[in-house]
Length: 263
Length: 124
Image (cartoon, rainbow over the protein chains, first blue to last red):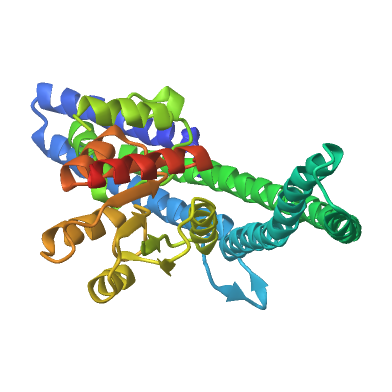
């Protein structure tokens, strides 16, 4: 890297030697020379700063290009960020489709299962009457007709039910596809994090050349203030509920909390 | 018994609608956000409101507050079904006058329990 430690140590070495000469001139009363040294110190600082800021600007530009943060499409190719956006939209779409497909099939299964259990219940009652010889010939003929009908409809329902269950099974294939997509997006985020970290390191070097001091205490306070989110905004699902004290871990916790409030 | 289900995800509305139907509540309507739900509540005699918290333009907690502030609506029992699980939020909802709070993911049994409890209290 061009803005390496060497240029900084060169710069610092120049500062030191000029400073030493400055002190020497002052102690020996050579004020003209001292002023000249102060001028050279300034020059060294300015020069170092210009050169390094120039280098850093180039590096910064490269790093930003590498980050590929531009959300637009370039030359018909999506940038990494636009691509990640597309991929996540695809995940939302796939999971929604799978959920709807599953619910469609479940809704179709329900009346079939209801028919089988209700009709079986009703037939069982009548069958019991027949076994206890509480049925006349006409009623028995009616019962056999109903059993016949039940058997043929159950056969159809059974086939439909297994077909739908297979459909529900297949609708879960989204997990494989969305899993792959999410893994790639996670990878991208890791890369972006590494590149951002490099930017932070570069910014640190600029600070060192320019002699800028940051008020870390104030920055921390500001961050804490902005972290305190308005509760009505909503945070969505908690991923690490078991590791946080301010979050409930389940319905039992909610019930306990509400009952402690007099609910 | 007419119930309004408010959630920005259509699949979640559908799940809740199905569970409610299993519990014998067949008269339901849906809204995808507080801003669409409020006029529906104001114009359509609803007896019960089931709402999510986190929604794009008007959140469930704001909808709850709007309902409680409206003379004609303030008696409607409100059940919150949400992924919001911070203690502060649950307390906030309780203070705003929620009648029940269910955290996602939830089971059919939990939903039934909370609804039964709400009606027990409302009718009792």
